[in-house]
Image (cartoon, rainbow, N blue to C red):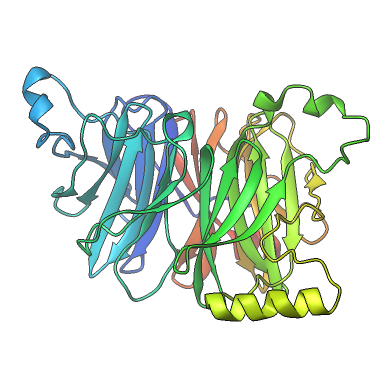
Amino acid sequence: MINALFVSDEMPGGGIGDIAAVEVDGALTVVGVSRWGRDGVWVWESAQNVWRNLVLPFACAADPQAAQYPDAGNELDSVALAVSGGRVVLAAGGDEQGVAFWDVGTGELISGTSFDAPYIAAVAALDGGDGLARFATCSGVHWDGITMWEPLGGLSPVELPESTVDALGTGSFEGRSLVVAGTREGVTLWDVDSRERWASLYTDGEDEDEEIDDYDEDTDDERIHAVTLVQQGGGLAVVALTDTGSVLAWTLPSPRQAGSARELARERLKQVRAGLRDDLDEPDEEIEPIRDPFDGHEGSITTLATGVVDDRPVVVTGGTDGTVRVWDLSDGRAIGAPLTGHRGSVRKVVTGTLRGRPVAVSAGDDRTVRVWDLVTQAH
């Protein structure tokens, strides 16, 4: 039996719906919000096992309409964290509020929003780097596309053209920052610096002339609930979770290197002269997902994340059975026994490092946060 490294006291308010975690000075700082976003933002300092209410200025206070709503306050249910210039930056929004940015240490509002800004379905921090913190947001049915933010850089937001996006993940590959998006049609992968879409992946791998399986009868049930990516061998793996608790995984070769318009034109000309299909900008329809590769939870999978343990890519899942499980991505086999302790559904799992060791952080309906050592689990 593997015990959690740390177990928090119960977070005040309702069950935890979302968390974000970063390592600061050798300890984890975890920010949590309730499922409905109305119980405030709480910071768990793992070293002291203390929950601190993070009192945040109202993100829409500078909006001229604020005078009409004197009782309005933040309603935040999606959060992300990044360390930038010695500051821990919180990006947060919700089903009824646009994204804004605060300093976790001081509570200062770095950049606010307006009442008319698109609401937030998901927010994610971009991995690593020595530059200023960057974040990606999507708005689900409220607004199409992905928006990139650099709140400490004073730059205008950058929009990546996309359809309806409900889930986001981030990562890096060969020094490039990547965003993976769960759309109503499938999953797309973006290089955010070149603003190039690297791959388009579809949840339905069936041929148009083939009979459609039962799971495709209601496409609304196949909305991507969570999506993540991890390096696997010389390429990438993308793992997605649908609203119905179904898991899909794709393995991709190394993404194409971004090039200038002239270089791409020359490559297209080579393709045509060689009699090959000019498909540089075509979706990767031939890459079909492996469906439901992880079998073991006694109930639905509700959340997932990816990580690397001893050079092995792993997937960490949480479920309605209150357990956290770790899987070998290459063969779908469970690594070790289920991680138990939560008293209710696990709503969010994130992965990261603590003093150089890979860890998973889980939270859920029992209002507690648990930190798991993935190295111990793998052995």
